[in-house]
Image 1 (cartoon, rainbow, N blue to C red):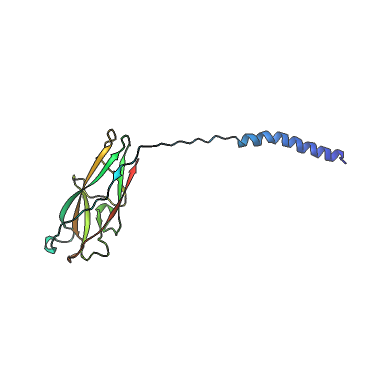
Image 2: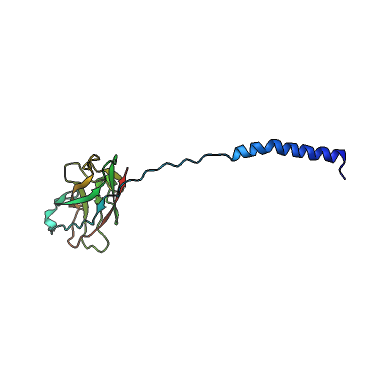
Amino acid sequence: MMTPRSLSLLCRGVLASLLLCPLLAAAADTTITAKGTITANPCTVKDVPVSLDTVTVNDFKGQGSTVLGKDFHLVLTNCPAGLPQLSVRLDPTTSLIGPPTDGTVAFDTASTVRGVALQLNFSKSRGLVPLQQLFAINEYDPSKGGTVDLPLTASYRQTDATVGGGSANTALTFTLSYQ
């Protein structure tokens, strides 16, 4: 049996629910906005084998000197037009010799050469290739896209006071960034 007090509580509860329901419904209303961009297919890139010529230990002139300078090209094809910037990152599968900005990597553990590393330079006098960081490919033309040719040079670099002859192998992976 309902007493005046229980009826009063029930009415207050119903009244409170009626007053709060519109607030709860308003709090549930929201908008989700999604934005995105779909670009053309990325550039096509192939592996780039670089065969360095044979040199003698007498070709090295002291720690820090470089020998040979073999040119090679990182060629990107079918690059889309309209990208604000195209960048690349080179990461050695071995360790760095010096800071990443020196562009110098160790030869792998199967290599038998001693006191020598591989150094990468830009062929067009832009200096050493920075490793483990993105750098812009200035050869990319956003108005055209197409083929992009990044000329590089690989050299032997003397890293110790003495050089021991032997095999010299290393590898780097490259990552393209479309920005």
